[in-house]
Image (cartoon, rainbow, N blue to C red; front, side, top):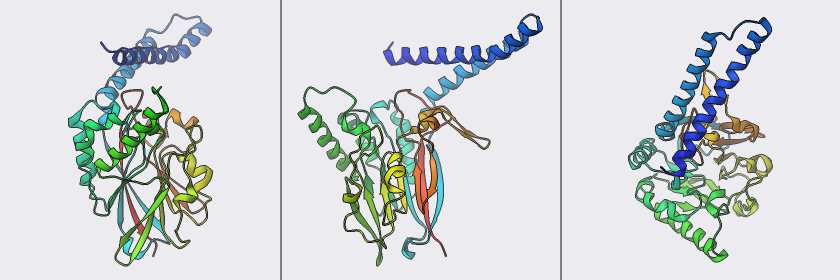
Length: 330
């Protein structure tokens, strides 16, 4: 039995037992104060909750991590060129290919992406966990993604190989160069501190991308360089992996960047988004950790991630395919 399987069993058991222990506290406190025996029905209820917790972890590890959800947003902008009214951008993020172990599930996810019939496809970083070779078995899958106005990508913090020890700095640099080559094999145009014009008829929008910039995760990206040769009148979409970049630099950048697409948080792969509740422990690290946020006329979308890392599962925060329909305010 592998170390990963053993560690996940241990995490599941410890968490479920901790849940039961916490839930027993109020019942035991009442019994102590009232001077009565422990209520057997309360104990049974707590035990059932423990079993339910185990079930959630098992579901998350077997099915949840591939339980792809399409999340759609319609965004309205005054400055969107008329020709782009109704333009659809499909976004995924945080593939973490080194964690995958189910080709059929991955193919189903790819089919769901193409089914959205987006005009433009973007990937917002973390293609691998650490090494470029992790994406190699999956190139034939992700290279199936096509959009009429192109497929574009950026790098995330994990793509630089910072989290493992390399034999030499040369090996680390070569790994990054190989990863960049794999983006090309995937059919992705890698935007590293640069921009391109997406043209539709006689009008265009700007698509810019930065190298990873994130508080505590490497501040590599150069926003000014990425925005070179753009005009104040341009409608601009920025790809930036870490949402702290938007908070720190982008939302107040002039000229205005209308839309920023990020990932990175994964929604911590654990939480609750139902019945009007949106909660994940990641909120204590990132105030805004998934979905749409608007400030200073600038819009941010944080994708919950296509893959998974660390914990080989997802509970309540499902892998996401985002569809953003851009509309011009009339």
